[in-house]
Amino acid sequence: MTAVRLHLFDEPGEELARALKPPWPRWMRRLYELEESSNEAIDTGHAEVTASAATSAVSEALRHRLDLVAFVAAVLEGLGWEIELRGNDLVATARMTPYEARRVLEDEGVAGPMCAVCDMDEAGWPRMWYGGDA
Image 1 (cartoon, one colour):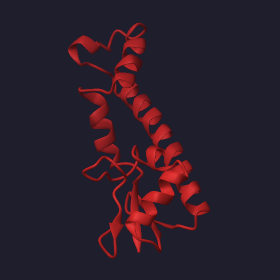
Image 2 (cartoon, helix red, strand yellow):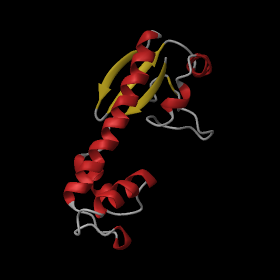
Image 3 (tube, one colour):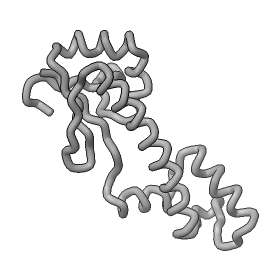
C-alpha cells in the first residue's frame, strides 16, 4: 500500500502569523504593496501590515492551495486511489508500490502539481509512504 499526504492548511494562527511578518512570498509582498498605496497603516519597507491585509492574503493563499488540492484529489480518485481526512491533511492510498505510483502520477501529469501541496522526498518529488508509514 502506497500513500501520499496532501496538506490542506495549518492552524489559523500559524497561517496568519506567516502573513504578518516577512519574509513574504513575492506575490504576497506585491499584494501588500498594492494595498499600501491606499492604506497608510501598511508600510512594506518597515514590514508593517494590517491584520485585515494579512487575513486577505491568507484567504488568497488558502483558496489557491485548496483549489490545487481539489484538482489533485479528483485526479487521484479517478485513478482509483482512496482518500481520507487525517487531521489537517488528506491521505491518498493505492494498492501499488511507490515506484508504480510515481510512474502513474507522472504519466497522468499530476506529480508536478502535487509538489505544491504534499510532502516532498529528497529528490523534490511527492513523497511516497509505503506500508503503514503514513
